[in-house]
Image 1 (cartoon, rainbow, N blue to C red):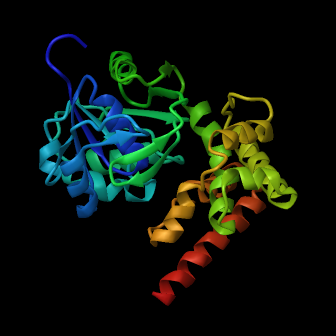
Image 2 (tube, rainbow, N blue to C red; image 1 turned 90 degrees about the horizontal axis):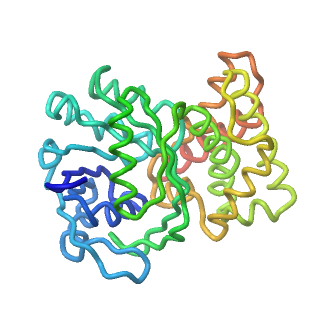
Image 3 (cartoon, rainbow, N blue to C red; image 1 turned 180 degrees about the horizontal axis):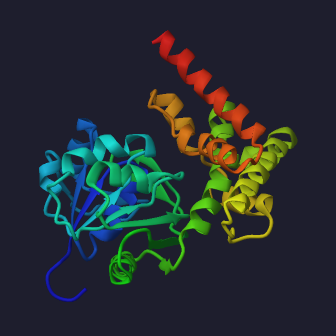
Length: 309
């Protein structure tokens, strides 16, 4: 991390993209790309800020070309948008530039490689950082999370570099040899909370407090854990529901990102969350009827909302 500042690109200037841009700008030259022109203008004008800290200036890309020289490229778009966001980068990035995905759900590595080719170095991870947009480029964060990354198809040295970049930005970060248990662990929580928060229009904390919602969330978590076990993924916890309640407590007063998708009319990540649990359940012969029902409810709501527009 000595010498010239690392060139870091960030795709997606939502709550998480802005949070990480703020921290990484401490030691790196950060350029952020977002498809929302109003968001991009606001960040270009006022920078990015977290809570009450002074804003930091961030370069704002006019288009993908401005990120082609990135030495690390962070992906903070929704999983459903991965292909669209990365296709302009095919054949343009340095082949050694790692793509770092801290996105929700499973299947992100496949989407990245479909867009950029099978040889691209991919670093996958999860983060328990919580962030909510107050205004474009201004987020509210508990600043108490942890980020865990692992090698999907990148060298151990590349993974260490990414950990160092995050740590030098003031983020708690660590690497693991096998990231799959952590990806599926996060999926257990997301499958239990995200769609219910969206369908019930409530916070994560409200789900845990209501006995009916809590019981349904517990069943969703148990099904997801059963599918992970069928895939021989050793989850990093023994009790799925206890883990879900711990995750919910971190963002107890926040709605899920899927709830905001409903409000904005953006396609949800349901096929990468509960839908993915159902798909892997079919492959392994593991029933997932509650996840199937939730996925169908979300798809039906999105279809009806689209018809009304």
